Length: 211
Image (cartoon, rainbow, N blue to C red; front, top):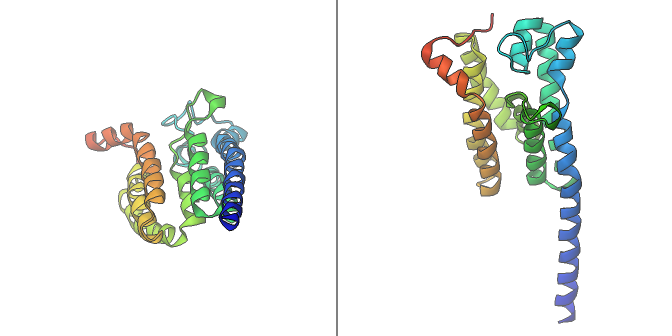
């Protein structure tokens, strides 16, 4: 009985420590996602991506309105917004916390409280999470994505391909972890919902290409 009591005590402490980390790290991850990469980079070049092009503060729109270098910088920044909290939390308490932190950063990017919960579409930030936690999935996704982008020259098509691959890749690489699968599926569905207008334009043939 004494041994069982000690086991329960240590288990309770471990659970309390884990929950304490979560309470601290999840808000920090959201704050990471809020960082306005697109507005900062494009603003330095005299552009406002929320008022120009498609109006989306993301890498592809910055590419269109401010040039390739600016677009690449925004892409790198948005990738890091997901990559950094996911990797840090992975080393603190494993891959599931890393996934939660990365997806929370993605939510900060999509729904930033500082900009009236109106942000980007989350593809690059979620991609950063994939690179940090599921590198093989990220490599396979890139190998599939690259020729599709070269063929169609439409960022939205590439994005739809990536978010389709992500939850399936997570399920396989996590050896069937349902909690990781459902979190990744939920994240992908949120990103998909942010592409509803793009899907409508793809159907009507009005979607912009990347030159």
